[in-house]
Image (cartoon, rainbow, N blue to C red; front, side, top):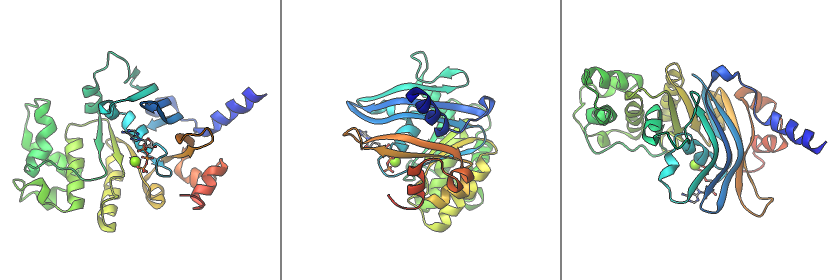
Length: 276
Ligand SMILES: Nc1ncnc2c1ncn2[C@@H]1O[C@H](COP(=O)(O)OP(=O)(O)OP(=O)(O)O)[C@@H](O)[C@H]1O
Ligand SMILES: [Mg+2]
C-alpha cells in the first residue's frame, strides 16, 4: 500500500512527456558536494525545441541540476552526481564520454554576462576557432549575432571590445558566443537577473526565437518570466525534514498547468508567495 502510494506520488511529480520529444533526460538520484547532499530524486526531462523553466527558492538546487546537465560541475572538487543524464541514447556521465564534447553540444549562458576581453567578433568566433572551424568565419559570426538579435547594434563596431557593450548587449553577445558552435541545447542560469526590464524583455523575446533552433533550459527567480517564456516548468524546494537542506523536484508540468492547477500543496504555497 505504501509502495503504491509512493509510486503514485512519483508518477504525479513529473508530467509524462513523449519519449521521442525528450532530448535530454536528467535523472538526478543524488547530487553531492563532498558529503553534503545538495539534491535528491529529481527527474527532469528536457523537451526538444521547448523552453524548460526551473523555479524554486534559493538553495533548492536549480543551478546544481542545470550545471549537472552539461557536466559543468565536474570542475568543482567534491562534486558527485549519482543518476544519469540520457542524451541521444547515451549517458553523459558514462566513463567513456568526454565532458568537453558534452559541453560542445550543450552550451551554457551564465547569470553575469561574461564576454572575454577581446573584440566582439573574436568573442563569437572563439568556440569556432577552438573547434578548428575552417569555413567562412565572417558568415558564421554574422549568423550567430543575428541569431542573438545583436547584429544590427554591433555590425559597424565588430572590432570593439565585447566589454564595451551594455549589460543586455553583453548577455546577447554571450548567447551569440554560445550558439555560434550550434549546440543542440542551451542552458541559461538566471540570464536576466543582472539586467534592466527592457534588456530582460529583449532576452525573453530572444529565447522564444531560439527555441525554434535549439532546446532551452532556464533557471529563473521571476515567476512572470517563467510564465512568459517557459513551455514546461520544474518546481524545486528544500527538504529540511532530515536535518539537512536537500533540494528536490516537487513537481514538473506544462507551465500553464503548473501555475493554474498545481498538484502539490508546496507548489501552491510557493506560487501564492507563502514562502520564498
Ligand atoms: N560549489 C559548492 N560547494 C558546496 N556546496 C554548494 C556548491 N554550490 C552549491 N552548493 C550548495 O548546494 C545547494 C544548492 O545550491 P544551488 O546553487 O544549486 O541552488 P539554487 O537553487 O541555484 O539557489 P539560488 O536560487 O540562490 O541560485 C545549496 O545548499 C548550496 O549552498
Ligand atoms: Mg542558482
